[in-house]
Length: 378
Image (cartoon, rainbow, N blue to C red; front, top):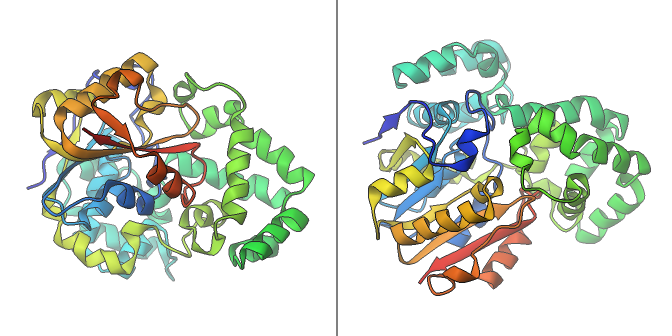
C-alpha cells in the first residue's frame, strides 16, 4: 500500500532551512541508476530507502524485487513527479510512458500528452491532481522537461550551444564510435576556444546558482565549479560513449535516444508489477529515521544529500543511517562539488567500498559528479 503524505517539509534537515521546495527542481533523476543498482546489490526482500527526487531511481530499485522502497523528499512538488510516474506505469503502455515523459515525440504532442495525463489523473491524490492540473504547459512539453534544472539545460541547448556547434556536429558527437574516434573528434572538432569560454561562463557558480540549482546548494563549495564540470564533460564525451548516454543526449537534444534504466522496455513490466512495494513521504531523512528506529534498512540511495550539509551535520546523519541500517547494508551517494564521505570516527561502523566505487564512477553516465561513494555497514 502506498503512503502519500503531502505536507510542508519538516525542519530536520539543514537544507530545509535554506532552499525553496515549492516548485519542481528536478523533473528527472540526474544520477545514473545503472551504477546505483550495481553499488547497492539489492536483494529480494530488502527494505530500501531512497531520496525521491523525480522518482526515476526509486522506481528503478523496484526492478530488483525488494520488499519495500521508501522514497523521501522535502518537496511536495518532487513527490508529485513520483506520484504521476506511478500512475503512468499503472495506466499507460511503455510507448505512451515515453511520450508523456518527453523522451519520445508524438505526432500531435499537445493532444496526445494531455490525453495521456487524463488517463492517469484519476489515480492521483487530490493534492497531486490539483498540482498537475495547474501545470498544463509542463504536461504539453513532456513532464521530463518540467524542472528548473531541465530548463537550465534547455537554455544551454537553445541559446549557448548553437553559438559553438552546429546541429550536424552535435549529431556526429552523439553517434559515438570507437574510443579513438571519440577522442579525435573531441580534440580536433569539439574542443574549441569558444566551447571552453562559453561552457565556463554558463556553468559558473553564479549562472548555475541563478538558473539551475538553488544558490544555497553552493554553501560548502570551494574552487571553480565550471572547471570541474568541464573536466568531467571531457570524460563523458570521450571515455564514455555518447551514443549510450541518455543524460548527455537529453542535455544536447532535449530527448532520449538511449534510455535511462527505469524507462527501458525490459524493465517496464517488473517495475509495474512491484509498484505496491513503493511508498513515499514528505519529510527529511533525519525525521524519518527517528521514526523507524534501529536495524530497519538494508539499502540506502542517498542521491547527493551530503552536498548541502556541513561536516558536522553529515557526521550526524551518517550516524543515524548506520543506526537505522542493518549489518551488511549499503549506502550509495554522490559528491558533486563538495567532498563528503565517512569520517574516521565511524571507521568501526562504516566501511568504504573504495574499489567498487571507483570502478562504477568511471562508468557514470551522469557525468558531472566529482565522486561516487559506496559504504557498507559493519
